[in-house]
Image (cartoon, rainbow, N blue to C red):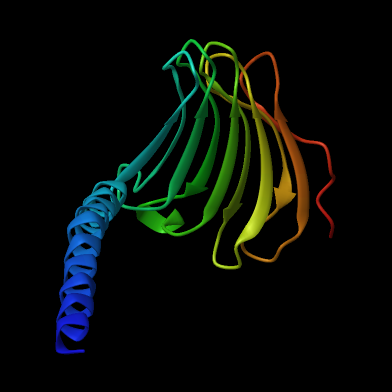
Length: 156
C-alpha cells in the first residue's frame, strides 16, 4: 500500500510539474503580447498589407484608422487630442488618394455636431451643423471666389 501511495504521489507531482512547464511559457507569452498591444494594434490582410490600426494617436487619444489594400487611409475614428477641441469626437472618410473629404465632428462647449464636406485641397466647401454657442442650425458653403456664404438666413 505504501508503494502504491508513493507511486501515485510521484505521478501526481510529475503531472503537476509537467503542466506548469507547459502552461507557464504560454502565460508569459500572453502577458508579453498584452504589453505590445498596449500601444498600437495593427491588422493585416492575408497579403500582409496593413488594413487597420488602433492606437493612441499622435496625442494619446484613442484612434482607429482603416486602410485600402495599397496602404492609403480610408476611414478614421477618434477624438481631438489638444486645443479647444480636446476630447471631442470625430469621424472622417478619405478619398482614394488619402485626402480627408467628409468629416463628422463635435465642436464648442456643448459638443454641437457638424458635418463638413471638403474639396480635394482640404478646404471646407459645405458645412451643416449646430453652432457651438447656442446650437442654432446653420448651413454654409464656400463659393467659387473662396467666400463663405450662408444658406440659412439669420433670424432677427
